Structures are given as structure tokens and as C-alpha cells.
Amino acid sequence: MKFKRHNTILRLISEQNIETQQQLAELLIAEGFSATQATVSRDIKELNIIKVHDHDDHYKYAVAKQGGRSSDSTKLQTIFRESVISVDYAVNIVVIRTITGTANAAAAGIDAMHLPNIVGTLAGDDTIMVVMRSQSKAQDFCTDMKNLLK
Image (cartoon, rainbow, N blue to C red; front, side):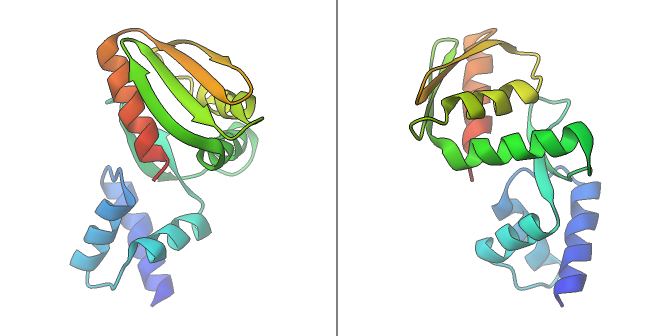
């Protein structure tokens, strides 16, 4: 059953833009599988699935490529997920609070995403400031980062 579910997950993420674990769980249920958020979370980890930035300024699930830059990017995104406490924005600046001592690593994860709407990042000990090109881009980035943490 797990093997079939894994194959279905891989097929679904290759055919559709899936942005959340909840969305993936709902699609699995529609395919006839019993899927909780915890099950989906474990499957994502086992299948080495990551969230990637697509051409529409959103994030979607994709299978991580092995080796090189993608592997480094995956590691940095993992560090980001594990170190971030909160994300908020004011005008065109996104403020990200992290566990003490992890802001630089989390900022490196953001920089590794190479997002075109980021003007720059500045990291302290437990806070990252991300300067965006506009308020709407800051709001979108803030939403995307919150989704990345789910």
C-alpha cells in the first residue's frame, strides 16, 4: 500500500501544482488512499520531495534532484524550516524571526532560492530582514514562507 501511495504521490506532483500537504492529502483521498497530514509529511520526507518556486511566484512540491546545487538548496530549505519561528511584513520589508543563532543559515536558504523579487537580505542573530520590490511582493513572499513552514 505504501509503495502504491508513493507512486501516486510522485505522479500527482508531476501532473499538478500542489502547494500544501493538505491539498496532497485531499488528492490522495480522492485516489482512494487513507491519508492524514502526518502520513503525507512522512511520505514527503521519504520521497525527498521539496517545495520549489514556480514561474507564477508560488511554491509547489517537486522531487529534489540529487547532488550538487539542488542538494545544497534542499539542505538550506530544511535549515530554514527548522529555524524559523515567525514571518511577518510591513510595507515592502519581510521580518523573519528565528531561533537564536540561526538567522544567517536561514537567510542563506532564502538567498539560495534566487527569487527575482528580493532586493536583498540582512541577517542578525535571530532576525532576518528581506527587502522586497513592492508591498504586494512582500505580502506574497510572507504567505509563501508561511506555507513553506507547514
